[in-house]
Amino acid sequence: MSYLFVITGPYRTGKMASEHKAFMNHLIHDSIFEAAARTPDAQALAYGGKQCSYAELAAQVRAVAACLLEQGLGAGERVAVYMEKRVENVAAMFGAAAAGCVFVPVNPLLKPEQVAYILADCQVRVLATTAERLTQLAPVLAGCPDLQAVLLAQAGQNASPPGAVPRLAWPQAAPAQVQAHAPHRRIDTDVAAILYTSGSTGTPKGVVLSHRNMVAGAASVAGYLGLRADDRVLAVLPLSFDYGLSQLTTCFLRGACVVLMNHLFAKDIVAMVASERITGLAAVPPLWIALARLDWPAGCTLRFITNSGGAMPVVTVEALRAALPATQIFLMYGLTEAFRSTYLPPEQVARRPDSIGRAIPNAEVLVVRPDGSLCEDDEPGELVHRGALVSLGYWNDPARTAERFRPAPGQDWSLPLTELAVWSGDTVRRDAEGYLYFIGRGDDMIKVSGYRISPTEIEAVLQATGLVLEAAAFGVAHPELGQAVAVVAVAAEPGIDAAALLAECRRRLPAYMVPARIDLRLDALPRNPNGKIDRNLLRQALTF
Image 1 (tube, rainbow, N blue to C red):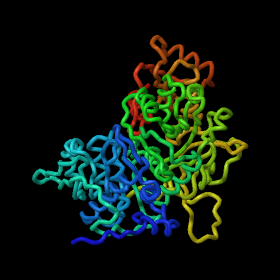
Image 2: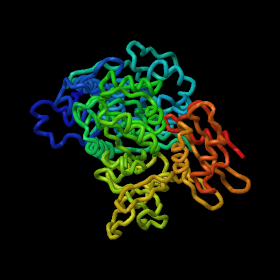
Image 3: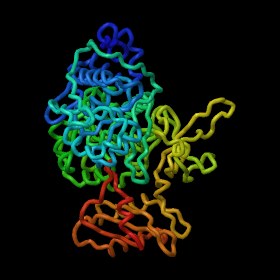
């Protein structure tokens, strides 16, 4: 049995679209359909030398939505997407949202057992992936009892072995009005996506994001970046990472183009920026450290670059300013539970390159003592974020949700309903002008002989010596001190030894902050699936 695919909300075209413009962009997929109606031939995506216009992307999103509805998926049921960055990845995520389902992007670097955990944890009904990845997952899918079908990105790969989960052929793009099931009605406070953390400590947590969270976040970030329809943004971060996904949502909101890249080396990114005339690039500190060491061509097209996922070393900021003098640098701070929290305007970078800035538009960021009172200027405290970007908690985990999502400080307690804020667990300070400075994550802080030490502060000093390319500081168990500072670093060049670096630390740091152990290596430090340094893996290899 089939039904008329109702042409409402994102499916309006022509005169009806202009009449109902006020109702657009409440849901995360609306921006694609609105851009397709406004500028159908504009590039939405580029991948592998091919381009996908907004009209073509809208048709693919619509086709995926219809395919999922034909499988009988109910409102809010989960659709996981496990593949490298490609057009089908994007169509699957936004197609799930357009159907009224919830998309769960899975990092393509995760191993089968990790993928199976996510599929089982949030009861995924349909998995969108590739034939090659499905072969790798086959041994673990028995542990995913809710999975009813697999949607394969390649054509002609829909034959299902006996006893296996049924395979679905990738749907053909359809015109605006087709015979299909009606999409489930969704509003802005309904769940749009579940983003799983990398699981560096304990089991991964699924952060639940509403349409409102994602639309408000896209509007805020696109606004302060000054994103334009003629921008071309290079996506090198995983789309399962909130920072990477934000590149899609902000660009689609403004009708800009996202160039998808599954990069191997930093030099490949520089080459892609030149060949694709990229105007915007986002990365995490370890990648920026590598990019800052490369030769950037004169007349680089980059209009802006952004950093999040950790504090960027000041020496790296200065190197990027020298290499890209015409490029605006946005230093940002975010957490998956609230998407994005702060940014430092480019005109402030020269004056305060170690700052994470102030609250983004439509958010308030507070620095709070353990008792909930507000800190004074320059007093360290916990960063607390309140506003429209605060997510809906952790999927199926009320205990950990209660730890992180708590009543916002300073509320009028006569109000009958309590506003919840994200208590980040990160320690920051705010100066007299309201600018914030990252000190460290609560679970990363090192405690030596009663002193609380920020690993970020030690790493900044190590970077400033010029003897290392990247470094990670952390606390390890010590029989006398409780904890001691250990450092693993990559030498700037062969021949640099740990003794020389330790001497510089003694000269630049108070005695209690001087590392008790420094391990130097020539190879890059290990990364977690989001591209950040894997501190847990390094810590496990070091003992005293």
